[in-house]
Length: 488
Image 1: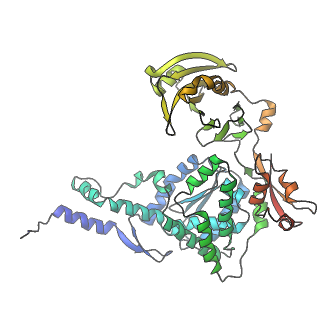
Image 2: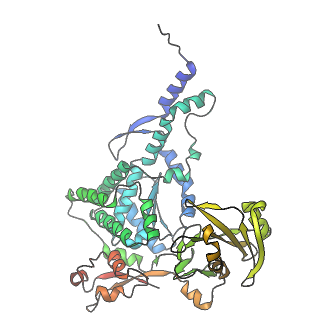
Image 3: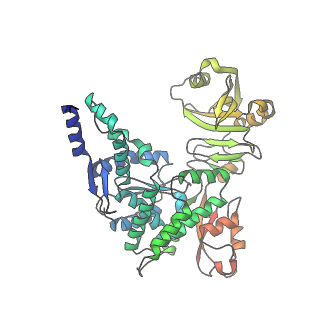
């Protein structure tokens, strides 16, 4: 015969669980959800993480005309959601990456890169509607509850030894609120987004057009950008699958009063920066130029240059050589040698050399040990250059060990090219921008695309950003219609 022993601590634990964890009906989805966070707590999470998002994604794109326009679209769509009265905040991030996401509490983010790809107001409304759907469906709260509940045994143990039963909200962090939603949540947000834009009298097929264009962008992107775009959407349903799903939802729309507002949209983004901005530096041919910080360096022919948020990465065609450029503040005034010793350890430094690079104090050192990078072993060499009293630039050169002698001089030329911008380079460092033009009778896709200030896939990109069919050039351009061009 088994004897039941009642543990008063455990009983209290489960009573507490029942009070803090509730299964409530969500007004947006109509489903019951397991949630721990209250709406007020979600609002607080969004408010706390908002400045971190802005910092992590290149800052805010400061263009009042475009910002006010996106605000008007977002608030119109949000007003037709189940949470019209929360304080919705729509932010344009100053990055060329095509992306959009949401934080709980009504914080919606859309990138400048996405706006350059969109072709009318309905398409932007569909993206904002999808992100609004994540908020109204309370997907962050739902994910947090599941994560907490899956560790309930550990949590019960915690409370027995005096620790809190639910995870500290302050520890959710930026990574937690931005981590990918499940495939079912993405499709649910698609469904809600279509509902909201239909109520807002936007063309629901805007979602189909934009998703198909995003899929086409991947096909003409460089391998590096293609991999990055794919990594952003890795856990989403396939883009074309989502396009088919939103088409199904749109086909079931009976609304007749719908709008695209293409002309309004194009006029709003006329003059918007395209690609990298001067604030973050930009790549022109084999040169990296930073107008705001007044410096440039170049890489040999055949090397790629990738401008990331926290570093500029260059590599040769075989990835035998990788050069990573970044910087650090040195307000403490310690020497360059002390900086690198603190960075990798004094015992690992060999072949220390002091030198001048374009009249600036610099050092080069080698790492005694091989280092791992992307799954391979590399010889490593550093160049540190004192740019001014507080700013130090760093080049980390990685070379396949058996090719060190072959590539040392070539790779050393990269940090040694660092210099201030010349008058000509200051003009070159100006960012590209979008210009809206009206099609004239003599214009053709071939003629216009050749004027695009891009190096590769001029014709394909021209057709892509304008929603045109390159295979049907005779019918694609309409006299008097508006088109997007990219100019220097």
